[in-house]
Length: 446
Image 1 (cartoon, rainbow, N blue to C red):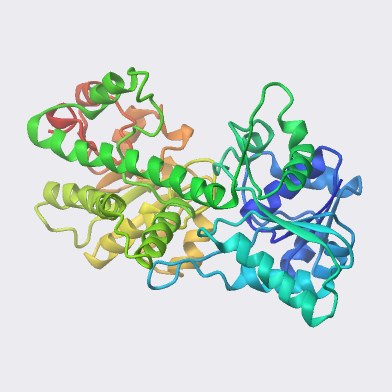
Image 2 (cartoon, rainbow, N blue to C red):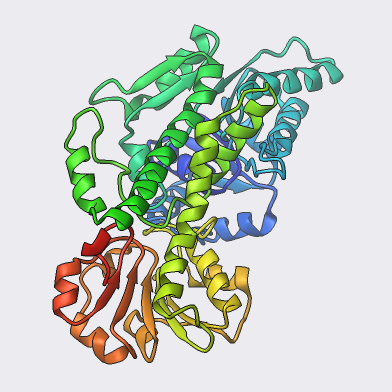
């Protein structure tokens, strides 16, 4: 099948590449000519395991094309996917200007039947509005006889495992208003639906809201565990023991029950704000989600409070080693990353930072600039040299089983602030460390 993917960001590039891997011919369209040139040269602008190999292979085989010409992509394709950004506006609502700009462009150049599929995360009603936008452009061209349909297919890709998530999905949701659209999309997605039925069809509005509902539910679980972790510190309970206890309940399950520094990235913060904001336009108050956001912001401050308490409120002149800068492991994405808030707070307090991350340091440097108080190193142990403490921010696998004896020789003091509950408090205490955790009570801090 022939597909046009408008937008080569995280969602668009992964989706287009995985479709091409199944033998489809895909045109990737982007207004950023520099990015298109990089992709044509085999340079991938994001870090995602397995993606670069798929892009290079399918581009070489002629299944994957990159262009700035929307008309080229639209006229060569049956399926037109819209996968552009929907950033958050000041009031929390989604900025849909890029979605509708693409819709207008489609209407200006389509010359035969097309199925326009919104892939960007958008509020309820947007997909049908996209259809109206295309229809107005066709009317302006006096081409009202041209037929088209619209649909919504949300993405459920986790950064760090996006390729695998696309190839082996938990579910594929198709939001369509008629059976023709549903059948076309079922055929397109059939290679990912072969072992067992995974496709769910529903009305467009339900599909649009399903995406927001999924991310909001997961964010709620995270914030609930983080709020519970704060209480554990007060009463001497261990959030890790509680996690195992409730996770064994089949009604609850074990996913997204880890206490830490809160959620970040491009999806959860943006989607919660959008759902809260769009609901407010209907005079509907998502009070639970507002509380989820509040807890998430407070959680980052809790780690800083532990640092301040240990050093009696005086951080000036101290140096802190940071392990991990991305918002989660296996990605270079630093959007809404807890590390950014922590670094800024430490610098404001007069401290300096030596940071290590396997892939995200360059992105942090772009955001924070060249600051003499921030040093980026190429090796994890080098970050520890002469530091007053280690702060574990992102749970990269390489940080799970370090050489603690070596760490003691490099740190000024054997102090670790474990923001992801990676380390065994009993073991660390035996080795002479002072360990602070997130919600492990008296078991997790001295």
